[in-house]
Length: 73
Image 1 (cartoon, rainbow, N blue to C red):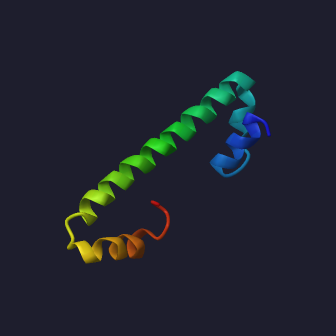
Image 2: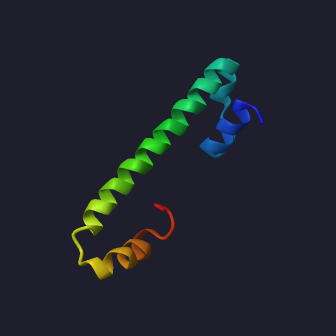
Image 3: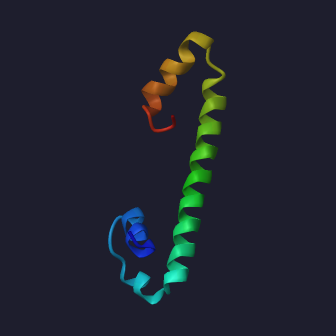
């Protein structure tokens, strides 16, 4: 797949503004978008782990699963 197609999929559909970008710019934007998603997920996971870490040990895993399912690994 092309970077443009991948970026459109990541953004949830076709955006006419992407037509104004070159292939290189589209690739760079896709890379930045995926990096931002990864950093956000890592930050959220860290924050949740700290909050859940305040719970008694037997409740930690269950509480995290109930609140977030498999979204945070």
